[in-house]
Length: 215
Ligand code: HEC
Ligand code: HEC
Ligand code: HEC
Ligand code: HEC
Ligand code: HEC
Image 1 (cartoon, rainbow, N blue to C red):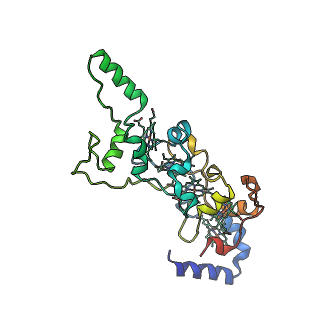
Image 2: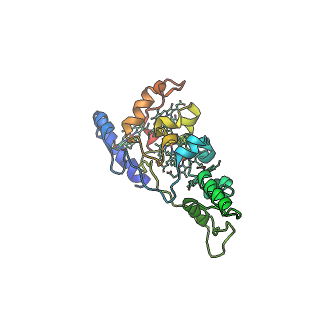
Image 3: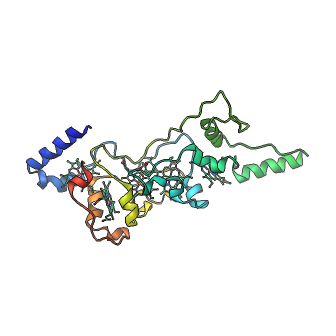
């Protein structure tokens, strides 16, 4: 929706004295705002493994969260910091080592099929060397959390106030595949803004001014 239509819509709502309807609006959920949405992703990347078991910090990959409106999805280059060296799970590597020992040969490099997709996206062939036939292209992750254009969310004030990622996204570090755990309704935002203490932060109130979230 473009900005002018948004402004007009909101103005009309105000002029008509629709404030009385705000409590009703708060319960409303627009289509596409799917609690429970858990799409398949192009690579079976696991938060349970990386953020849980390996303990990698959320902001190592989502570094935008304290710098910009968006937390951001890491590029394949961030994954390659590790996966240039780690080409398969420890257990798969160990299995190949044992087989090689039995057969009296050098172990081969094991490349997991899921990580092979990462290498292809990075323009690398099966030998992990640049393949001129492959054009590097971004991985097309399916977006999960998404607000309509007329509502503005910014990660920065939340991160600075100390609201944990998990308050809004749930225990991501236990999820094999990310699932949307909140409806993202207006009521959800406003209820916390009225009394954010439950979110474990020092501030006693956050804004409930319409123009903070709609502009
Ligand atoms: C090693 C990198 C990495 C780490 C560490 C990481 N993430 Fe992610 N995150 C990703 C990638 C890649 C995606 C996109 C694929 C997916 O949805 O699983 C993603 C997706 C997400 C999404 C869904 C985004 C959307 O489309 O709406 C949320 C929410 C999220 N991460 C939160 C977290 C939280 C919270 C932590 C820490 C507990 C964390 N992530 C740690 C890489 C990472
Ligand atoms: C800090 C290092 C690190 C980063 C960064 C990292 N990974 Fe990993 N990843 C690992 C380790 C270690 C394993 C193997 C764990 C095991 O032994 O099972 C792994 C395993 C995987 C696997 C499973 C492989 C298999 O077949 O079992 C996939 C898929 C994967 N990573 C994708 C990604 C993607 C995509 C990114 C970037 C968004 C990423 N990783 C970033 C360390 C990392
Ligand atoms: C106060 C609630 C809240 C907190 C705290 C929060 N998020 Fe979000 N996050 C959202 C909402 C709402 C969206 C959808 C925003 C949109 O569509 O513009 C979102 C979107 C995302 C996305 C996908 C789109 C993007 O912004 O790039 C990722 C990834 C993400 N969050 C990760 C994180 C991480 C990591 C943290 C902790 C550092 C965090 N979030 C903290 C509410 C929150
Ligand atoms: C779990 C609690 C919580 C939820 C949920 C939440 N917020 Fe916030 N929000 C806060 C806190 C705390 C602050 C920081 C207040 C401060 O620092 O004074 C904040 C600040 C903001 C600000 C900055 C206000 C300013 O004065 O600059 C905006 C905009 C905002 N939130 C929008 C949203 C939107 C949109 C949603 C829903 C999609 C949302 N918030 C959900 C707790 C929350
Ligand atoms: C803290 C952020 C925040 C504040 C403050 C806020 N809104 Fe919203 N509003 C939202 C979000 C987020 C949505 C999107 C809800 C959805 O997608 O279901 C929304 C949706 C709406 C809608 C569309 C219908 C609906 O409920 O989904 C209207 C109309 C609206 N807001 C009007 C207002 C008015 C008027 C005010 C001031 C009294 C206001 N909003 C204050 C965040 C906010």
